[in-house]
Image (cartoon, rainbow over all chains, first blue to last red; front, side, top):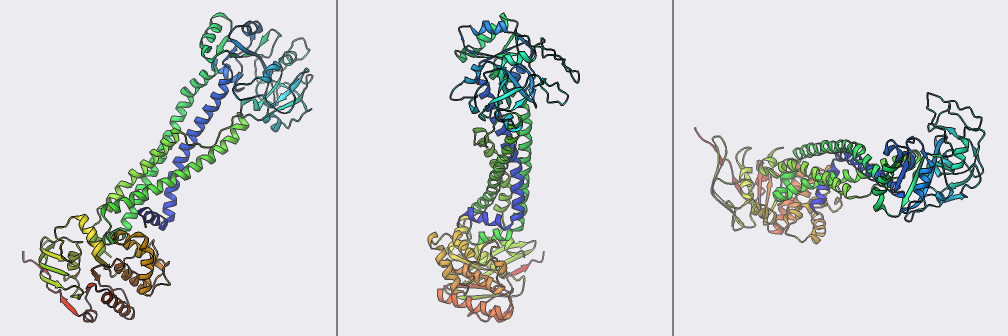
Length: 413
Length: 220
């Protein structure tokens, strides 16, 4: 019978107290697991998406806003830019591929993205972000290809028709372009990317819908500004793939210095966002997680200390049977280890459940898929720190046990 | 087997334990008899090394233990002694079988692969072969003391120290436990030191040591 078994038996003998202590450790570990996993996973996913295109070009303004609106479909565009700039840059020797983007409308909150058909065939690495699950790509006017989330949420099947509404907010007051119905001709495979919640059509359709030549009388609710005028010589943004990622900065400088437009490097903007904003949020959440673990360590200490006081006689018996002080000390430390280890395992599980729940939400809301909790270096370090805290919490009770006065404790009834 | 010569131990302000001479031959069965507080248990604690003497010589199984280090005393207790207590002192989380195994685990004199078989055999000998997997909480007081006797004897010790082993038992159960303890000690040729304040129990043992004057209060 090992000390591990003996320690386990004592924990099992006071199941409720042990379970509560394990739960308190698990809460802290769960929070830490969820925070680290979500932070790492979302950053990884954002950065992956950010790597698809080397440069985004749009109207001058906030580069992060440009990236968020064009690559992630999360923010309002910075404005419009002259298509002549796009046409000129498209011919630049360092540009491998360039795609215009025209935006202005949504359907049930999902953004209608006008582009050229060749974007649908764009691949990077081993990824095909625009792969079809059903149907075909858009060809004729007002044909649309919808993302997996859009198809599911808006119940759009092949052949279904819908109208775009003006602006980027899903509002019942938004003006519908009822004389320009789109027909669904394709549904994209779920990719866990922003494409899942986008609707793609030919950029010509976007221009046609917003052409002032039509007799549409747009009515703008809630003081929304009229930014929907897209003459044929304007685009919202452009996605650029360069010959090499190494020339991103050089190309960005070229655009910013020489054109009435702004270039942004998606991956750079996203990393800045993480460092500035989410970095602090992560620190705060991690601090809360470690605080919970700290409190749990205190509860391990108190729980074990009380348990040691209650079983001084048992410890004295073990000493009388030949147990050394070191073995008694070790048995108590092992109890602390068991409690902490169980807390870490339970916390890992809780973190996984939280991540799974948030994954559902993120897939639906942002189109990002978050993997289950994985043992990254950060998580291993965090778990090790928690176990170390548990062991440290066990030292005082173990020392109390170590100092057992056998003769006195055996004589006390 | 056990020898105490001029052993002194201070127990408190003005209270001193002093034993001029005590001797028990190997295989002897000695009752340490006297009223409560007379120093019987102190004598036992000194013999087992649970208390240290301030002066004098304590020899057990040929070893002078009064100057042993803590770790040497731990090993000495595990290898050579078996304990039987008044309150049984079984470990609550463990079954009868496991309690006996714990005795072997800390004594570390029996190879671990033999622990289970030996514990079973010993519990069979004390008549508890059918209660191997029962925890102390569901055993009767008599059964608990039998488990304690099995635990004390399983390591084949040289000396059994029993501190009021029948003190918590009714007369009938006490009779059975005493008979078992004496029988097993005789079979195993183990020396027995048994503390009791019950003259009837004391007189069942061949040798009686009167502890009445072991603890003295000084005038000052």
